[in-house]
Image (cartoon, rainbow, N blue to C red; front, side):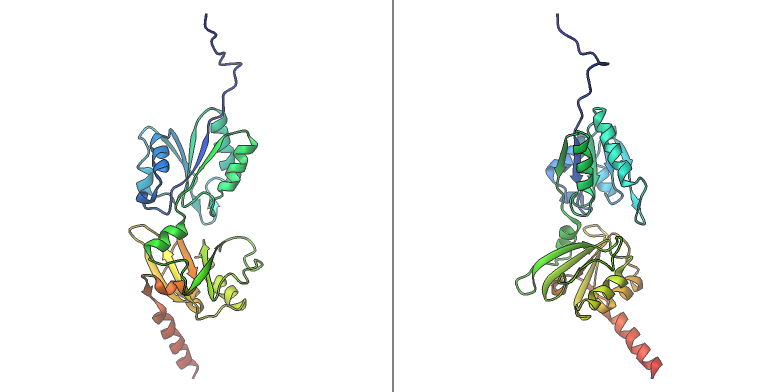
Length: 270
């Protein structure tokens, strides 16, 4: 006589949480593995930056839970997101945690991985094309170039203690600085870099809505960065690329607006 499992006494085996990178927006940049997991998922917990085209790949029977972030605040605090993933997994429900870009580049994937590990929940990381890599490729902006840059640094421009962070040596000759989440603090970022010795005349590119149909690539100089973001009504998601490599981008040069304002100001003072 076969032995039947006792649903009351037999513990539920934790399911796997898949931390999946959805890339910067273009569904054709998804990995094959990411597409398979999205299509097979019964439960998807996703960020607001995941495009509608990518979410449309999910099964009509899948449950989609948004934990979108608005104005530096999650609709659900990060600790609650961690707990949500763990709770579903411990109940035996496999979860696809769908994150814009790559889970491990400013995606808080490390925190969610730690929470799963601490709870004894299996976790798998599926990398995605990062926003910087995808947007730069779309703009034909090489983040490294033998004639311009041999080093790249990624930093977050919207976090606590921005003024106190040490960015010395991250931008300048032979280096590329890529700033995530820097639209709201663009003026402070420019002031910070210039105060640290970076030339005000260093080229800067802003990549808005990278890889999407409405992507814009704007180019100016570091001294104009804050004014340009306001003048051109740049919105998130957008990346700021500081360095000589910005000269190679297929971009709209918008420095003229700043030059005109400088000339007008000089006339008013004379």
